[in-house]
Length: 356
Ligand SMILES: Cc1ncc(COP(=O)(O)O)c(C=O)c1O
Image 1 (cartoon, protein in one colour):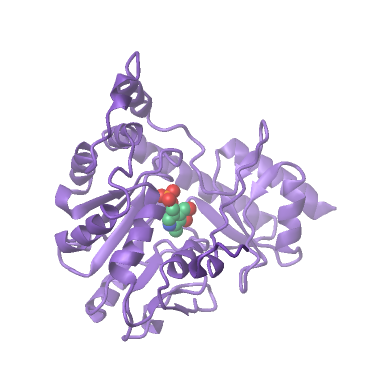
Image 2 (cartoon, protein in one colour; image 1 turned 45 degrees about the vertical axis):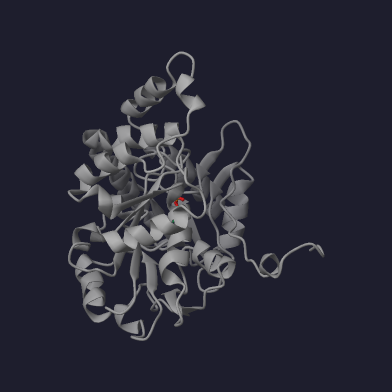
């Protein structure tokens, strides 16, 4: 606190990212990163962009990320004008809050969800109301009041991993036509159905995605929004009032190369899904109760062991999982799906802890 702070800063509730431990070999299953390096085409593209002298870095990057948007448009079978690009989907979401979700009525999002939503609402002084998940920690479309200034949730939800079928999203869109519906698809590639296929039919639908998870580019910070042109224009108006060059040259080249390698993408998503099922089976055998996951993480609790305590004991062994000290979910661990070897190491450590 300082007398120089603005009122806004005093009232912020900053997001706390998962720990990035400065250790030589942590077993890092706490921030839903991909355990595999990105497509080899990414590395080749980075080398091409840098050349021998990094000459291209003298110049500003393309402010519109045109080549990247063309590659992403081809992947989704949509037009480049239906795509907004930002510095990670976090930045995309921030612009969405200002451009579309700051309305007279309250923005609605689940009580258990990505905690950055609350941070953005505070930062931009947006009135919001949370809608409780049901007892199984599932989103229920019917619980969202008709009067609202916008609806936002991840599908699959985070940190539960539970997905809604596309038919439920469409049911919501049919009912809720007066405000924007934002579906945050950070984890969609691990088994949920994308709503990008619906953007032509629903003018109030905006879908947000990232390259951080399924494309293994968390370090590059590239995210997208997909929607009809007037929604995208609103985002561009905010972006060009904030930072004209949100993506540097390397990020644009890397993300574009990733979209040009569909077989790497399909193969690695399948690997993670297979490892998730294997990990889920092993945790169940140890007595954990799991929420069915369509993401690259599982959300698990043990009936006989405290969640915070388990996370702390794992951490003492340099094994990092995420624990949220929040109502309703403080007994759960959110565990990122690593390689099979990483998951085996986690299971061995948990087995020893539970046997103590
Ligand atoms: C639900 C959800 N949305 C968005 C993000 C942001 O991803 P990024 O900013 O890396 O694109 C995350 C990151 O963990 C997330 O869990």
